[in-house]
Image 1 (cartoon, rainbow, N blue to C red):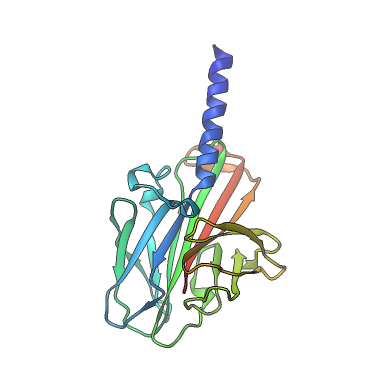
Image 2 (image 1 turned 90 degrees about the vertical axis):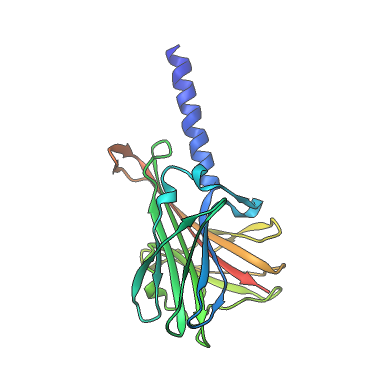
Length: 238
């Protein structure tokens, strides 16, 4: 009986690990906005490449309790109110200045996946006016993906992104890129944390970088021996 219980516990932990690893948190919002006009934002959790968007009550652990932050071009940071929907949380903001606005989420799940601590991160950008230059320093997420210039990219033309971890390039690591057609591919970063790929279809894409470390600690009263962080960045292709 003890052996059976132990086996079931191991299987449950493994299932939880696989389930969490397969899912991600991401932000969807239009690339461009207008001064003085409310701009909509949606936050999803699920599997983008499979077109799976989980209902908030099915999100892992307490991930639904995330905080959505907005950073204006001048560096002013504010928390946005989020409202649960059938398959996402919605929010909005009204831009008061021209420039590129940064949207951020960074949430450590309360529960461990087995003995692993999970940290869900996401970023998105909105261009207001003619400016499209991204100030990556305004994004406080430890692991982040971004493009130097925020714009709607064109299919069959290279898209160049950068991945950074704690202020340093995420060098020689795979980044998963998924398209609205169900296509996904791992693209390696170079020594500068840069990756490039050719989008073949129009629509919204989601790129995800991950980092896994064997570290020990205590999280909400439970010991862990590994820490995982996954960071997403969504963008549009025309």
